[in-house]
Length: 454
Image 1 (cartoon, rainbow, N blue to C red):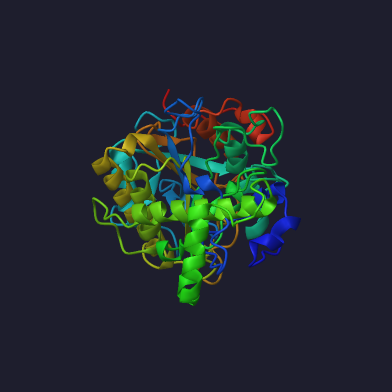
Image 2 (image 1 turned 135 degrees about the horizontal axis):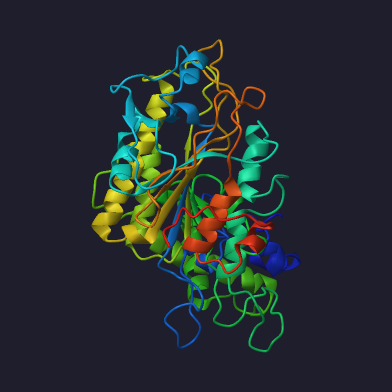
C-alpha cells in the first residue's frame, strides 16, 4: 500500500486495508505522522460510564524475550552428571563449581543433575528467589532447522509456520472489543462505540510475526526519539498547517466519514499518544540497568509499565545466538550473551519490585531451536532442535519443569523434544492472560503445562 502525502488522495484506501497493514513506529513520514491506531499507544478506552474494560484483566502483563539465532540450550541448562555430555563436547563442556551454577530442587520435577552456565548469575538469583521456572526439552514435532521457518512456527503456534501470530490472535479475540457500532451497522472499522483495541508493543525496528493479528497491528519502535512526527525536522513551514489540522481534527470541507478523515484522525491520535509514550520511556528507572541492548529494551518496557500504560504484551529481542564457530565454553561469545541476558532480566525484576509491579509481569524467554548435541569442527555448534524456556515472575511455579532430554536417544544427532511449546503457550494464555479459549487461539488442543501458579 502506498501512502500519499496529501490525505485527500487517500480515498482509495479502506479502513479495513489500513487496519490490515503493518504499522511500525520507526517510520519517519513527513506530511503525515506515524500511521498508528489510537491504542498502539496502549491507551484503551472503557465503555461509557465504566472505569475499566469488561472481561479484560488489565493488571496482568506478558513480556516476551526472544533469544534470536538458536540458543545452545545444552550449554545453558547443563546435565552435568551425564558422561555423554562431556563425550559429545570435549572443547565446550562446562565442569566444576567455577563454571556451573547447580539448580536446587524447588518443588518441580526435573531439577536433579542440571545446572546453569556460570554466566547466568542473574537468572540463578531469580531462581533462588522463587521467581524462575526452567522448562526443559521444549520443541515441536518434525522440527525445522531453518531460522526463518522455525521462528515462523514459534510465532504462529502452527507447525506450518503460516497464519497470524499467536499473540496477535489473542489480542484480536480477547482484548480488541470488535463488534458493531451503536446503530448495529458495521462502521467500516468493525469497532463499536466505546470499544477498544490494545495493540502490543515491540522494541525494535520491526514488529515480530507473533504480535501480528488479523485486526490489530502491533507497534514497534527502536528509540523514543523516532517515536514522533518528524515533519518539523524537514521544514518549519509544515508546522503551522499541522497544528491547525490537529486542532480541527480534519481538514475544512472534509467529509468526517470519509477515508481521508479516518486517516487524519488516526494519525493525529497517534501524535498525541506518541507524546505520552515518549514521556513514559524518558522516566529514569528505579534501579540501574546494564548498558546492553537488551538492558536498554527492558528499561524502556519497565518505564512504560511504571507509567501506567495499559499495554498487555511487550516484546524484546536478544540476538546473536547463532554460534557456529568460536562459541566458547565457560568463556567466549555464548557466555557473554548469557550474561547479558541474566543481568538484564535481573535488573528488570529489581525495577519491577521497586515499582511494586513485579506481581503483574510475567516474562517468557524462548529461542527458535537449540543446537546439536555434539560440537562441530569449528569450536561451535550447529542448528539443533529442543531447548529450554525460561518463565520469570512471582506467579510461576519456580523450579525445573520436565526431565532433561536423553543425550543418547537422539533424533539424527539432535535432542528429542519432550514438551510441546504450545503447551506452554496454552498455560500462559489461559492461566495468566485470562484467555477464555486458548485452544481456539492456538487452533488446536494442547494440554496446559501448569507453569503458572493456581
